[in-house]
Amino acid sequence: MYGALWRALPGPGWFRALVMVALLVGAVAACFQWFFPWLSTYVPINDNTVG
Amino acid sequence: MAMAVPAPRGYVPRHATPPAALRRSAAPARRNTPPRRARRGAPRESAGSIVIGVLGELLITAGVLLGLFVAWQLWWTDVVAVREQAQILESLEWTPPPVEAPQAPTEHREAPPQEPVPPVGDVFAQVYVPKWGSDYVAPIAEGVDKEKILDRIGVGHYPGTAMPGELGNFATAGHRTTYGKPYHLVHELQPGDPIVVRTQSTWYVYRVTEHQIVLPQQVEVISPVPGLKPGDPLPELTKRYMTMTACHPMYSARERYIVHAELDYWTPVSEGVPTQLTEAGVNVVGAGGGA
Image (cartoon, rainbow over all chains, first blue to last red; front, side):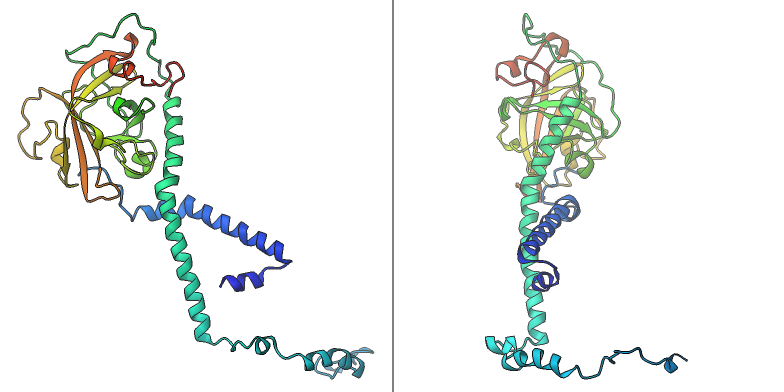
């Protein structure tokens, strides 16, 4: 999967590595911004109200 | 018609054999070099091994994502909420109490002024708990919606319960873990500890009376008289309670940790800072260096 991505990227090795790191950072940022807040609504580890 | 057009000079159909010179330069290298896979001695990848390889990578990815989720929940939500709550406290722009007051403010024990009921989402109070450190202060907003209030603003006030100082029960909820965790140390409160609530005009000094661990559906803890079951006839209210609710055990939603307090006294903000804060060295928002 990630090997295929590596082979699909153009350019020299350092450039591919750079693109891979950029993709990784983008994916983690998207998780922090949107995916995890959505996921947390299904993980009620910190509900604190009564009723 | 197109077939009738003669091929231009020098045109070589794609399937035609390349000229001998070209063949000689390209072919020998290929003939002497065995295919890469064969040279490494690895068998050609079967469909099954590709599927298992992708599955393995997906599982590793899922594991990393779960780890990241824990980091986000336990660390990043705090980073964001602490920053937001500090901004909220500053943006209130309430008149700070006079710091160099000539004497301790009067401790009023008669009925305090009635606080107006704010619209849901409005920050209408701050809470100081000297026991939780000299820098502890959290905003209180109307409403207990998890995403809009508790995850972002800090402490929420159960709509329909009493306002600060009012007869009945001023009931609040706050996170004990994550999202700035305003009620992180709720289990440290002992009977007699002061909880100081400030609205724009008034300080309310409550004293802790007891703590309870209850199930999430036990709403009687926020009744106007704590313990009064829903549907029970409401007696004449004589006491001014405050309630804190937080999750229990930490990192679980199984039970709730409840702290009850009763109003000791109130005093106007214009008279200074309650001695419970000054003696503990608590930094009051907007007063000399602020929060």
